[in-house]
Amino acid sequence: MITRITKGRVLVGKVLQQQVEVLYLGAPIITSNTRIVTLADFVLNSTQTIAAQPDVPRNLTLVMVDPNASITAGLITIVGEDIYGRVISDVWNIPTNLVSTKVTTNVYAKVTSVTTSGITGAIGAGSDQVSVGVGDVIGIPDITSAASIKHVLLGAARIASPTIATGLGKSGINVAASTYNGTKVLQAYVLRSE
Image (tube, rainbow, N blue to C red; front, side, top):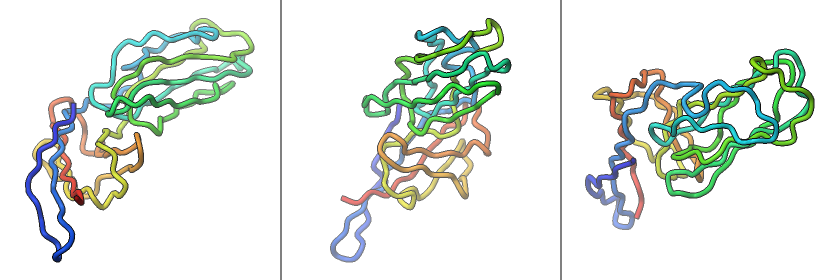
């Protein structure tokens, strides 16, 4: 859950008023490739079992394994909701004869389904597998400019150069290099124009 606190207003010139919001983004856990869907065999044209939800709104990771090239085609689709409850999705082709790791462009607050479709070829039990986990980008309310993020803190430490993503359903902050651990609270100071 994201908590917003308005810290005050700044008069710039005589026309533009701006407001600083402090966003408390939770205490993200370290990234995990198996939090949402644990490593499981591909199931022909079916839904994978959801083991858990993202700890905080964030992007997701997808690991697909087909080491023996037994799958010749197929898709994996992740469907869920962003921080506003809007439906979002990401879709990938299933790779053949390799291990492939993908990262969603969307930031998920909730995952409703992970499905496979259009699979052709033979699934090798115990070898052709998929997992879905949580990534490094922690979701924030939609912003259009990275410059609107003025300060980011993880725990009590100010992060000098956070990576900022912008866009509808994609806005987020990545400070994983400072080590998420499930106890350090992530905060962002956002300058908003009225």
